[in-house]
Length: 307
Ligand SMILES: [Mn+2]
Image (cartoon, rainbow, N blue to C red; front, top):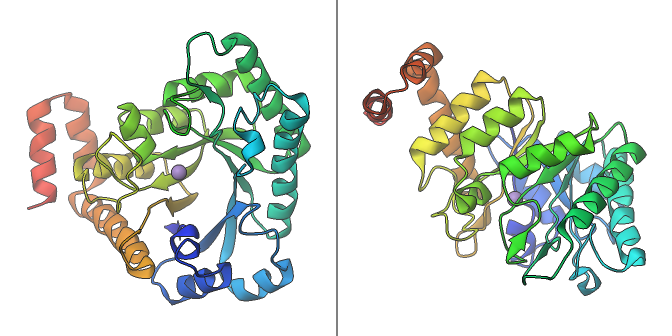
């Protein structure tokens, strides 16, 4: 399996991008890097980054519009100049990402949402998002443009707030190189069962990325994968295997109090452990239980895993 960790687990503790890459080299299992753009790239020398990367590959960039001018919207900002700039961030990110050998641009529209009734014309904003995604997709047809949804935060309501809404949006955008990244915690926040969204996206060949983590569902907890929701984590991995997911497993977790390197390794270890448990029991057994549509058999399979 291909694994990547969250750069900010190190950077937000006062280390820099090079320190993070250095730590990944010392871990067991990290194969890829994932950068936030522009924060982890602008101000750094690309050649220096390439040198530090060594045998690690770049999976992709996540676009982050940190400037306060984007607070009223990224792709749906009422100011056309700011909308244009938001799209330009994506184009610049695609160009730099390609230069580092990456191929996935993760787009989480943190400000495209609303807080009040009568605050926006929904159909018009929906159309703006379609147009913006098409513009980015057509600008970089060799890149995978991947939509990451989150139900709320920063806005009280996000426009792309669920797996179903993203699938609908992907249909409307109608571009082969636009797909989705599923964040396990975000799915729990929405009460979207993670595997349901995974299966629908994978069926349409639209599963471009994963953000693995865990939580209790009422906030973006960013806890270690497999720490809270083992049955759902196992079901998720079962479907990843079933659909032969060959992308990168990125751990989007927040080790605020934990040591960043140990926490990242704990994610990889949990994923590997559950992955191997499924292999030990055998995919056929899982297929057979799923085909029964029976709660008691499903629960007994979960107990078999922790036996
Ligand atoms: Mn995420």
